Image (cartoon, rainbow, N blue to C red; front, side, top):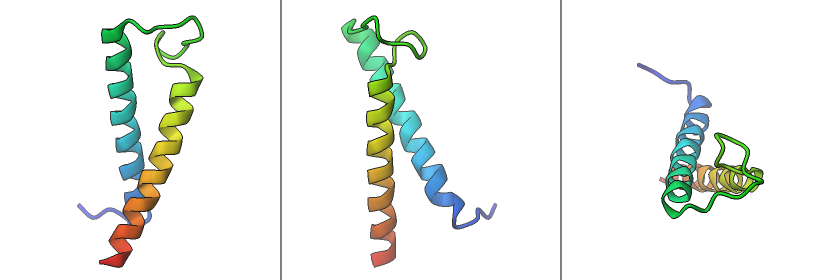
Length: 70
C-alpha cells in the first residue's frame, strides 16, 4: 500500500500523539494525580494536550529533517 509522501509526517505525528496521550493517561491513573481541571476522558487537562501537541510537532519536524539528511 502506497501512502502519499505528504501524509507520512501527519500519520507519524498522530501516532506519536496517541502514544504520548496514552502514556500520560496511564501515569495519571496509576499515580492518582487527577485534578478538578482535568476534562478530557475525566483525566487529561488542556495543559496535557497542549504539551503533547508541542512535543509532537517538534519531534515530527526533527524526524523529517533527519530523513532529508539521509
